[in-house]
Each structure stands twice: as C-alpha cells, then as structure tokens.
Image (cartoon, rainbow, N blue to C red; front, side, top):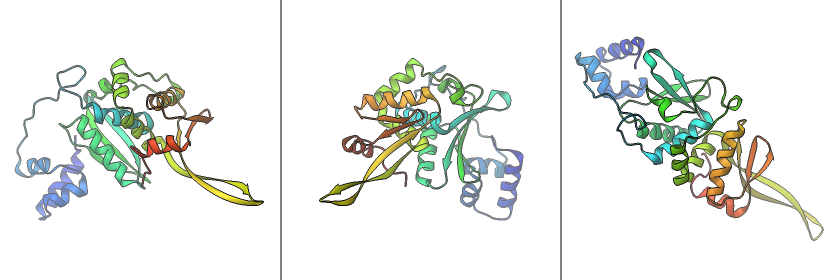
Length: 249
C-alpha cells in the first residue's frame, strides 16, 4: 500500500546508510517492508480474513473504541481494486489520543500497517483494507449528519457490552472536558465557583442518540443545552466519566 515515491525515498535513504529504524520512523513504513525493498524479497502473507464475512475473530474491546472514533472523526474512502482507507482525524494537540487511535485500529486489523499522515493541525491515522465497509456499514456518500446512521445488531451488542470504550471514542473525537464557573452570593458577597463538565457535540441526531444511549447504560445523567450539544455536569456523573475518559491532555 506504499506508493512508488515512498519506496524510492526509502531506497535512497538505505543506500545512503540511514538505519532502518530511522527510516521507519520518518516515513511511517514498517521495517519488514524496508527489508523487502532492500533485499528484493517479497513477503508471502495469507489473505486477511474478515470478522464479518470470514473466520477472523474481532477484538470487541478495541472495536468499541474504534467505532466511537469513526462516528466522531472517521471516514472511509474507496481506492483502487476495492480497497478502502479508514481515516481517523486526530488533533495534533493530543499525541496520546493519536497513539490510542492507532493502537485501536491496529488491534482491529492487525495484519496490515497503520499509517500516520500529517496534515495542517491534525494527523490522519490510516489503515487500508477491503473489508472496512463490513465493519463499518454506516459508510455512505456525503456527511454523516445528512444521512441516516444506524447501528447493526452486532454493533449494538458490542456497545452494550463495552459502553465505556465506545464513549471514550466519541468524547475523544467530538467531545471535551472543560471547567465551568458560576457566582453565588454568600453573606452579601459574590463568590466564584468552578466545576468540571463534559461536552459532546455532533450534528448527527443519530450519533447523538448513540451517545445518549451509552450514557444511559451506565446510568450517567446528561442534558441537551442545544440540539447538537450534550452536557454531563452533575458531580457523580462527571466522576464516572473521569474513571474511563478524563482530560485529553
């Protein structure tokens, strides 16, 4: 899945004596692939099996997290020979979350490399596979908020079993933990009080419903200050989210 320009750049670097480890980190190419290009060998690997239309077992925990990330900041795009790219856009301000997205993607599809493509202000975590549409049947033309988004029965079962990881993916993509403040008059004097709050924003009413449903499964109270924004502000509810989400940085 590496283009010829990347291959040529790697070959020139290897010929110049740069280490495989250094080239791998700089270009995002696995060292196994670099050895193949250097030695002129071809690695024989069995075709990857799909957990939905094949015999491979799906890592349900990682998938619950990846599903939340996909619904928030992910997309599928079709390439040649019916190969699809799964892309998760991650803010460069939070490198830990980029690592988490890459780890979840790799666990769900471990037989191929996960790439990190730098853009202006964000990094796209990318993996190529013909079977990504099998795992994300929500894929379709146009933005998610302009079409119906529904979870398949097997996806609902995974979310119901791992709602914490699903919510972590949603809030890590389209949510945040912020500090709010208010004032109260005590003994005739105005005093400032601060309190944490989680916010989740999404233009899709269907995806917002999934977030509400997962919170209900955990008995986490929430409210809707706007149609496209969900708030979790009660102390015990925030404490619950803190136990498996927490601040991004």
